[in-house]
Length: 387
Ligand code: HEM
Ligand code: SF4
Ligand code: SF4
Image (cartoon, rainbow, N blue to C red; front, top):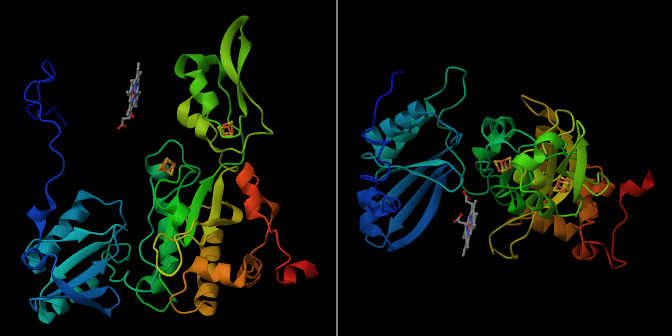
């Protein structure tokens, strides 16, 4: 397309420049019933999966319909969301902290019209555009990251595996049959953008090969001390390397100390480590952020490696489903996955979920690793020892 100026003058970049104005104030976008009853809500109930009812002290009622969002969406799709909001909700809507979309109405008649409209909308491929659900003891949306769509450090994709897992979890998105909510999150590398470290189920991309050191350009494009200090295990040291008879500054990686975190590549573009067959996924379970009953917990590694299997990641989806189904059957009401695993003991968790326990899951990172081992004679025999 031919260039169309917005009015910005590249010859005088600072002229008419507006800065530090921050976001729009959220109050500008409140539906009237929210504005009126703000801070004066009495109670709420979940009418059915995906539909909430809040009642104000004034007696005012607001129904909220929560629908799944793919997070990555086109302007066309956002326009369709706006069209729905115009038609049913006076032009108002909001997005949740798990990237679902919520439409609000004030009467039961409006609620029925809205839900019927939402349920009728599908993409040409057959997927629901606005599946209703994500409330109560369910699997709601998967908090996820950029993957191969936009980041340069991923060890797996984000949008692809999330679609595959949500297809498998769809019945749990649309129902409220679990002991408690199950939060699933995905990060495509160990930077863990998002919530994988504190989710019931965390899916994390990992590498299994040390970085390649591009000696010929490293000193020109990297701040060597930054790369060295990026390494959590001290695997990198400065090195002089001879290329075409010329001595250049570079680094040397001690491969037996490297655990492929990729942090040096984040600092130094001359240390790439992505690998088609080397990269894959780690499964973590048992994290939570709420204070309900037990304190917040980190999620823990239970499957050290699952290969990347685009486009549907069948091994990954099977394992996630297996864990959710066993948890759904075994855990008590209100018990989060981590609370359940800690109550029955991790050895029982591995047994019930039929997961192979490998040495990779045993912490070996610095002094705190010691506190993850068992300094007690308290344990249960499991079928693992019969083998
Ligand atoms: C020659 C001196 C310095 C250089 C070359 C430098 C360079 C940088 C660079 C490249 C970044 C990252 C920007 C980005 O994320 O895009 C940064 C961020 C930052 N620098 Fe410096 N810096 C210098 C001195 C300082 C000093 C003296 C201070 C504080 C007293 C400072 C405080 C910060 C902070 C707070 C950030 C993070 C800003 C943010 O992301 O919110 N820097 N600096
Ligand atoms: S998790 Fe890693 S690869 Fe994924 S978006 Fe964040 S930094 Fe990029
Ligand atoms: S990948 Fe991680 S562990 Fe390996 S050398 Fe780089 S920073 Fe160190």
